[in-house]
Amino acid sequence: MTQLVQELANAVASDVLTGRLRPGEPAPTVRALAYRAGCSPGTAAKAHARLRDAGVIGGPQRSTAVVTATGIECARAMLSGDVSARVSGSDDPALDLLLASLGSRGERVGHVRGSVAGLGSLAAGESDAAAVHLRDAVTGRANDAAARGILGGRPAMLVHLWRREQGIVVAKGNPPDVRGVADLDGLDLVWRSPGAGSRLLLNRLLRESGATPRPQGELAESHIGVAVAVSSGAADAGLAVRSAATAVDADFVPVGHEDFELAVSPDATAALAPLLDVLATRSFRKRLSMMAGYDFGRTGEFREAT
Image (cartoon, rainbow, N blue to C red; front, side):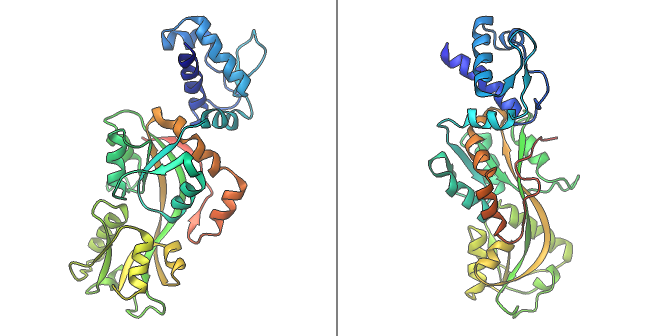
């Protein structure tokens, strides 16, 4: 019975955290909670009491409860508990920093980094969230179609982490004189693994520009790996985020910005509470702001994949 009470309370808190219920809006009544869960009104009333005690909902006891002004923060704190967020998918230096800051409350899962592999892990239930940056070829929108489709039609949530700048990394001084993607024609490139969002992006850019680099270039598992391979002379150029180029003091030719987000099953929003809690702190935001090539203006926003 105690577990059911907590599950009911967590479900409402998750709705508040993801924006389905907003501050000032009516919370589900005891009767509505009981009907939805198929439980007794007494059990639902206990869940209501836990939400009130946590500060997620408020108002006079005998009137309709509403989500409090601080409901989002209280829901995040309530859901944090002892859970650990399992994150798969795309590589990103800022994401590595975030997961390191979580300690035992977060971990990267999966042997292969990349948006496609991460979505596969999410669909199989092996992770709670997949880091993605996939542009839909038809609509031009970022991540929605991939996140919606991978869950077999079930609703998926997207958590915006940041916008990041991708570009061509070349050695200091730009020896091959690369000014754009077309200048990669005939060069030795370092590639990300098949299924990585950055490799898919580079393939599209090369196809659009008509450039044909030399075949069978170096492979790298991360953006830092791409930058190190280029700066060490193992390749002429490669596609990576600006922060990776800055880390090894390489030159960077920008090609565009993209949304970097977490695709999440609605059932797993509670597991992400520790991650979102750290992401919202001023001290961590300050650390992120010191990394080149990121825009954190929409960090932490939820939306349903459409």
